[in-house]
Length: 107
Image (tube, rainbow, N blue to C red; front, top):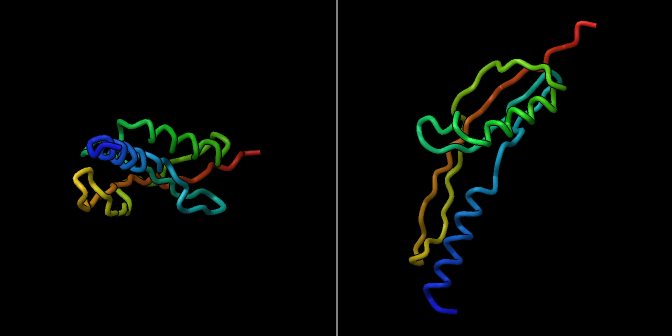
């Protein structure tokens, strides 16, 4: 395998591993919980398909009836990846959190 093709394969693997983690239920209670998802940029938390994935998780958990109690930037993570040039690079992943409460049926 040529050096440039190894670098290309490594770059693709690094990019894919950064995209692999989507919306995640990080806290669950009897009445609701917290879902987080990764985002980039200052308004990236609003304009990502992962927000729809997070909302879908909440709707599924609450059978469609819920209220968002609070939302904001949640604790992300920092990881070290190998770059195409062969050196380590630090990647900071930002996450957005949605705290929700399921609505109780009036029956």
